[in-house]
Image (cartoon, rainbow, N blue to C red; front, side):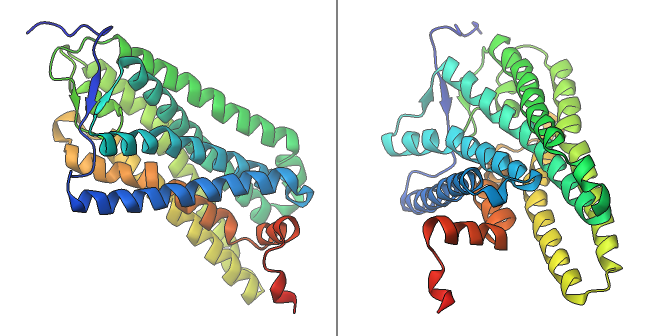
Length: 312
């Protein structure tokens, strides 16, 4: 079989939705989720930037999470919707590279940022007297910049490899975006070394942060259990359990997809799992982490005048 000329041909994204009425219904739901995620995350960024009462390490980290989620979902969903409505499933070679770069950057950076947020809550609850020193503004900025830089470096290496390897099989990617496992399966060379590097990368950027988050929240819940205030214990437990739910929604499908050997991958299963961390999580994050927060609701009241009727 002749090698595919990488410079003049496109990839084909087979997509997620069936071309029928069921597909149209699912498309409507995805559009609704995309709208809610975009509005929710953009609102969070605006509130945290404009309200000085939210200028604390916790909310600076939340603003970055919202920015990452906004870029995350905008990298994938618009192209998926365009391809479904137009019937044109193609994506250019460089376009696929750019989509892969931004996707992997956001995935790695968000994994590190979520670990930073868990550490912030751990210090605030378990070591409140040391919080100003351990989570100073300088430390917060270093965490944010470090997450972006490390995520970008990791993504650059993966994207360079994906664009470099020869593709001589079908150019049809059985996914709704340019995902690494789906693209590697099309290569006409032995990729076991690269698959091992994907395993290492996933462990460093997703599995280890997930274990760190679990340990941090475990310590937090243990500290909460020994609280004297029953109301404070209930409030903190509710908040931590909600955070862990979102973290699980994000990390578990990711780790399960990228740590499995290629020969046991199921394209249909991979697409369903990808929906959790590419579409659902960006919508849930502003709701769970932020919009249920009294300080955020107070900022909305001050800036937008909402909830003012509750005063009467």
